Image (cartoon, rainbow, N blue to C red):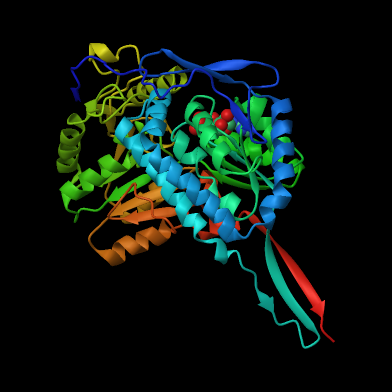
Length: 495
Ligand code: ADP
């Protein structure tokens, strides 16, 4: 791997504020307890800021504020709500570099890719802002004496709990619940809260007080009381399977509607007839090495190679991986940054050790890069294991880091079964020139989002979500907008 030799020049650009606040009821506030917690730059270990450590009292304040804002917000037309959201999208675009720099500092992903995240959030906001007229009901033929119709109404207060891996992209995706007429509480991940706490300044200027509230804090102190709060009727969660399960259990007490976007151990199945260069590029891009250091739920972390092309494919994939420029995330030339935290670093390193012990072969990577400038951060080289077998934990468990496993196949039924044998079912990538074969496999694969001859890309309007334990509900589409409504049937006696 080539590593940038230049010394680190920019670690604390002026984008950082002196003090960070939450947004509750249109006011910039700290935690009621006065407590804060630090957020660190995982590339250098330096402290970036102290941010409010919210607890149940702050959650209660936020829930009351969101509830108070709800009657006026729901009375606006969907188009008017969309206009507010569009203004917010414009602001995100105008301040793209600030948001991208904050995420780069807080998360460790490359600056250029964090710009893409900001743009992606803004585009998604515009998409939902234009869908307001789809919040429509139906008329039902109940007979000559009755006029029956349905309305789609908002739930009230929605909680949005987001993960560390794409901080602003997830936190800023506020439009689906808002256009549907709900008010919102956003809680970013405790590892990467800064961009969401920057966002409060734009939200405060753009939205009426209480329509969007932002609270920072960890899972037990802030996330759990948010899920439990009686005023919160709908929860949108993106994160790990374990926490997703805990949220669903907790939400059961209040019979709350929950959507869950969880993990993946996603297969990429390569047939022998493919254009190798394109398929290799797709295996590389699909792993999101240069977007999130593999810390993405949709990554193609299991690559099933037909034995006829296995050797040639591996040679080309290793060549591709060797070209990655690992460096300080804030450096614009950097293509791959570091992992988010020591905990994540230790987890990934322990999986690399497990893989070796299980008998898989490290083809490239396997540890920290040697560049002396990168020793203080949680950098891990792109790591590829060959000879991975189905029984191994490497083939079963989500690592959430830059570790890709190669498994060889010969038999179509067997590879389908192997691909489906994990508890996850988020994405799958099938590389095959024969469309009927590829389509048959796509039908057999237990995953909510399948690419044929592609990987990694999302498309606005195309439902994204998981089968099995990868989640509940679909995002990035009309169904997502509608999932923030409940249906009311009205029956009029017209006799
Ligand atoms: P990741 O490690 O991918 O960020 P997690 O599932 O650990 O995923 O965390 C995702 C989000 O869920 C974070 O905002 C975290 O604070 C929050 N969270 C963690 N535990 C809970 C919980 N018990 N209830 C509600 N939210 C939680």
